[in-house]
Image 1 (cartoon, rainbow, N blue to C red):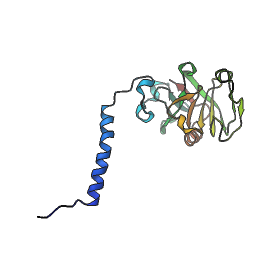
Image 2: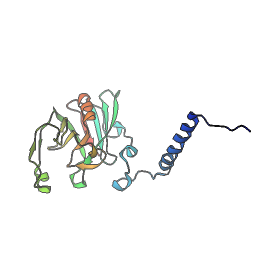
Image 3: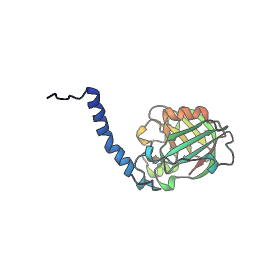
Image 4: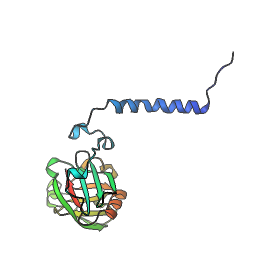
Length: 193
């Protein structure tokens, strides 16, 4: 009687399928997104599709929607040919979250950082100023909004992305803010929802 010995490829394929099965089953049984922290399990699975037409009359120079619930930033170029989606950090509490329409009024590579009065009240030991560099909370690039002290900026602390971790700003990975910095001109309309 001959005995069948499976090939190495068959064993590896079977092993990969067995390892993937629990993830697939969890994805199929996951509850739909509930608006709020309790329903957001992972940032990548909570992105909600946005359409620029639901937020702006025209694209103008360009358009950004920062969705604080799904922790994602949506970008559309002025002609609509370029759409990009970025994971973000969002304000750590509802009282720090500002919503509405604004625009990019200034951009800076290597921004320096100053603590706001609210930050100092929350944490009296916080440094008052940080020059550009690895410890700076604004990362490598910052885009200033028409609202004072609200920015879209990078972060050196990648653990913050996908979490409620900022004092009001929208944070991106440094590589992603550098990309967005290049394509979002001053005058880009921004809506935080």
